[in-house]
Image (cartoon, rainbow, N blue to C red):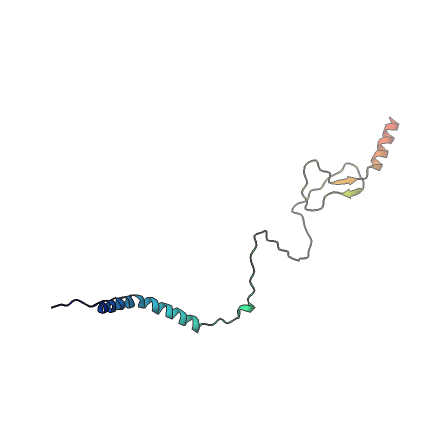
Amino acid sequence: MDKELTQSDKRKIRMKKTAYALSPFVLIIIAIYAFRAIINPSISRDSILTAYAEVGSIEGTVSASGVVIPEYEQVLACPVSSKIEEIYFRVGESVKAGDSILRLNTESLENKHEKLLNEL
């Protein structure tokens, strides 16, 4: 005949089942700690430099030497000969329609114009 188990026997059986259920987790935790103990870092934490990354534009400079050549050039023909007194735009700058590119010496043109007016 079967007899009823005592409370201590029931507790022992429950503890055995719990131990069997938890043993894989305990073994995994022990393996992780053993692995961490075996592997040591080759550099110290003091030799590692860390910083916070900030959001913004990236700016980089490259030092170089050479000649800057425009993509294309256009020759401006002037009907009269004169000297250039001032240049308003440099090579590579964008120009809008109606912008003055340079200033010419118009003194000789004005003299010729006055002479023609006097002759008339």
